[in-house]
View 1 (cartoon, rainbow, N blue to C red):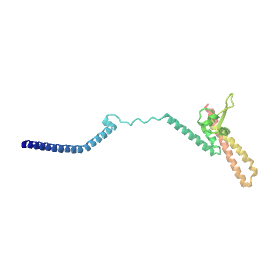
View 2 (cartoon, rainbow, N blue to C red):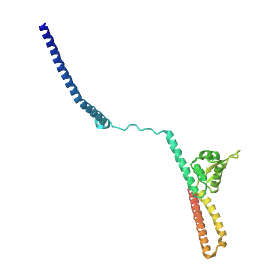
View 3 (cartoon, one colour):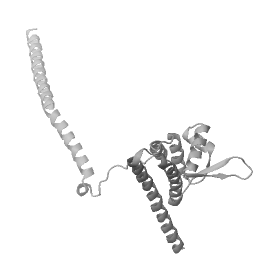
View 4 (cartoon, one colour):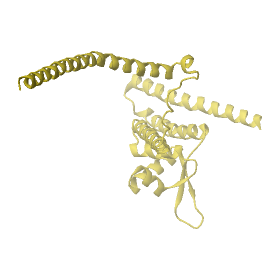
Length: 231
C-alpha cells in the first residue's frame, strides 16, 4: 500500500512536471509567433510594393508600361455638347442684334439660319428656338429687310422656306440702302437748323454717312472686278 502510494505520487509529480514544461514551451512558442507576425506583415507589404513597382517599370517586367485604356467618349455626350454649343452661339447672336435695337428673338432666328445647311420652314425655326409663330415671322421679316435672310416660295404651297443670305456684298448693299435712307432724312433737316453752328454740325454728320456709302460702293466695285477676272 505504501509503495503503491509512492508510485502514484511520483507519477503525478512526473506528469505535473511534464505539463509545466509543456505549458512553458507553448507559451514561449506563442510569444515567438507574436514577434514574427509584424515581420510577416512587413514582408507582405514589401512584396506588394515590389510587384506594383515591377508592373510600372519596363526594365523590371520587360515590357512597356502604359496606363489603363481611357474611357471612350460617349457619342451621346458629344451630341449633347454640340447642341449646347449651338445654343450658346444662337443666344450670343441674339444678344448682339439686341444691341442693335433689334428684338433678341430676331438675332436668335438669324443664328439658327446661319448654322443650317439648307433652307428651313418657319415651323422648324419655331420648334428649334421655342418661339411663337409671331416672333419667328417678325424675325424673318426684319432679317429680309436687312438683307440678312431671304425667303423661297414652294411650288403649290403658300408656305415659305427661309435661309440666311450669304455674301459680303448682300450685307453691305443692304447696309448702304438703310444709310441712304438716313442721309435723306438728314438732308431734309438742313433748312430747319438754328444758326450756323448747328448747320455745320448737321452737314458734318451727313458727310460722314455719305463717305461711308461711297467707300463701300468702291469696295463692292473692286470685288466685282476681281470676281470677273477670276472667271
